[in-house]
Length: 309
Ligand code: UDP
Ligand code: MG
Image (cartoon, rainbow, N blue to C red; front, side, top):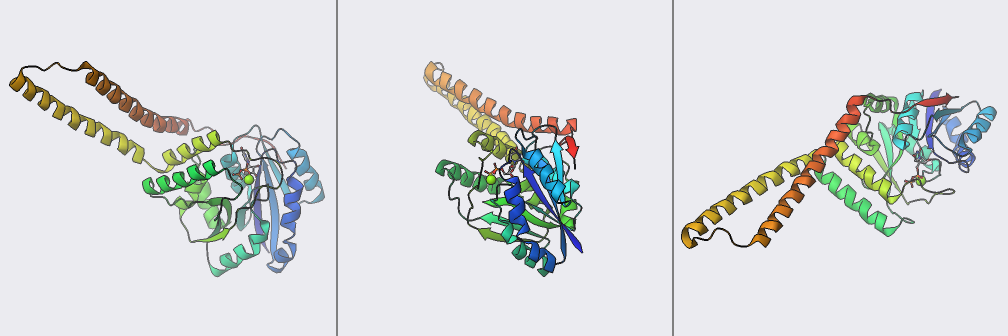
């Protein structure tokens, strides 16, 4: 028998824990015919509701259910890492607790694994049910990201992904603190089959992502997988030096011909404002990378476990 580890990051999902389990176990006949044992690993990401109790209740009925409970909220990326670390299986699959990642796709995913793919990933082709402004920014992010990063980051990719052991180990080997999982998946490579499906709306509870959180997350993604912003900063520096040099020549020539080098202080104010603005902007870019480096060299643990079951 082979083992499949199902990893479920859960943050305040008390209403969804049991629903998810029931939905997953609808695949039981498939698991049996494919000769798969299953372990379900719920990662409680510092929930403040009854998530932990619900998982314990399930675990008391089914010994295949496991729990890793964090000491506080560390974010989904940390939960994914913890889950992959805990997973014992020949295969691991990441799934959201809110049933936005339909477990019914598993048989199809295994078909591709059996065909020889190393991992099967999913992307949603529509963004139905999402605020239009969020969709717009998400699209823009993926466009920019793919222009400035060598790592391919697929638009609409979800974290729902089935992987062979080899891929799991590769991801675990990337023990960086600033984790942008979508980028990490692309970075490790391996042969990946993409499945597409229509966006499924969350069954119960609310999304944990606000617009601001998503915005900061996108900045994390850019700094983690591209250094192009730094190049832009250098480029702007060069551009402004050239511009300044031309202005010097212009001023000297004007003085020699017309004898009046000092006219127009408004233009001077504009130039000073523009240049200091650009300077601060570039300093900000450098600061972003510096802060990420700072967090990285501290080597803090990615998550802390309070309880394990
Ligand atoms: N999640 C988590 N930690 C967090 C935020 C979310 O473990 O800090 C989990 C959450 O419980 C869910 C999954 O990550 O199972 C996806 O979260 P959500 O549905 O809020 O995101 P969305 O689907 O809206 O992108
Ligand atoms: Mg969701």
